Length: 319
Image 1: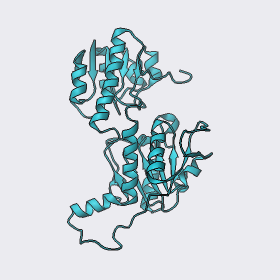
Image 2: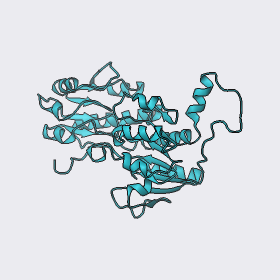
Image 3: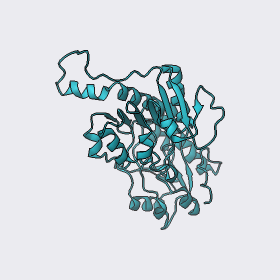
Image 4: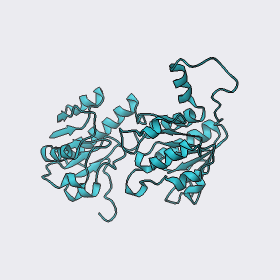
């Protein structure tokens, strides 16, 4: 079985992939539409990841592949309906990323609240003049309110950390009713109610249904001392609206691990001091990337053996 892997993976995962006739792209950039078409035409299975160009147009040409074993839980870079129409199954790696992504949410929340990125830049620039009573005053986190947008696996993991670790009062907005979320958190009816918290963490899937879910109107519901954290997908947020809110100090700060047009980060964000910017580190730990790879290998092995795929992505409604 000929397998194409879109980017290099950890040594343990690549050793496991040696069971197949595996080929690797050497570029770290996302696959272009032309590359996606060539991969579908030339391989039995493809292991894509974030940003790779498997849009509907990728499936318009010859398709030899019968599986896209996505390395990652998010798959908004793949047109699943178009893949199914072309006879291509899509799998992902749910569960493996939950705790690591929740940890990054809390990292960003604390960094933004305590202005840690500003302090780190001050020290590196050689401009720190010593301890001062009013230098880089931030906000206390313990006991504050947290608004969660999305209450799936990652949202719940963030809620547990926030409540049990920091005594935060957790409220959440979800498109589905969750009368018993299984932890101390209350569901609110509107997005604005969640956004009105001291801290907001967005943890929804990417895709057309959530694109620019967080725009000027949602950000306007935040208090002036509020901090906004995004660990979901970059296009969930209208970046122009967020930049405007931060620049005008309508909100106190933000922490971002994802961007609307990765890897491009707009100058409007990089110029601002009141935003913490990470290079999509949500799942970037050795254990997690190895775990994601093991799930990919399991999906490939099941496909090769003609068995039920362990992590088949469901067909979109109406597709």
